[in-house]
Amino acid sequence: MGDKLVKMVKFLIIVFLAISLEVESKPIDSPIVEKELYKLHVDSLVNNARIFEITGDGSSFILKDSYIGKPSIRTLKKTHLVTKRDKYILRFRDADNKVLMSLGIGDPFTAHAQHLGYEDSEQFTFQVGRQDISAAIPMQINPSSITIEKRYGYEVSQQIATIKLDIE
Image (cartoon, rainbow, N blue to C red; front, side):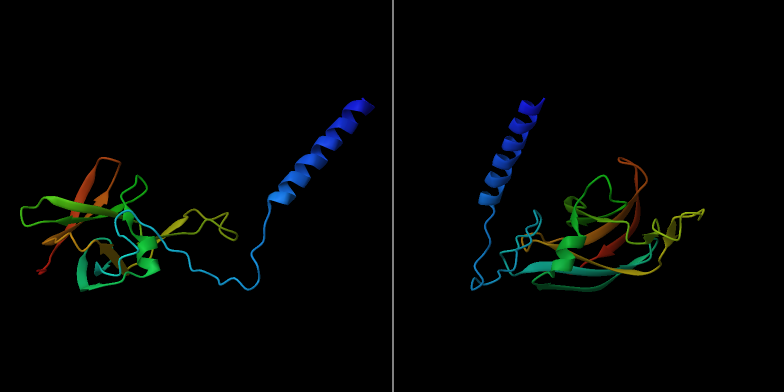
């Protein structure tokens, strides 16, 4: 038993030394580089994208603003390609009502309260009311309308609102 213990300790020391030799620290004088956030639907290296700011409460939506500019990191983090976890979807359509692009926005109208202090609560989700939603799409896409859909399952969705756009 003593032999096995000695071999195991030697092995652990060798592994620890190998790991510690692999760790490198940056020199103090090297500049801190801000990370680029890469999204499939918007190229973060390009400065311009079509940005749409929508206000809604889950049942009605209005377009606050649309412009061309560099999307903020928050906008890029909040919108993404559609996943199964998204309850609300923005569909950008052309004049023939063909879907050009779909973005998922999750469920921005529900707050989840599953943390300390709410263990005995009967309800863990609360409706939060009117929210501002920003979405960025590539410049090459020229939608004529935005359709907002609410999903009730992975394949079942209901169209809530359609916003007509005036984009050249």
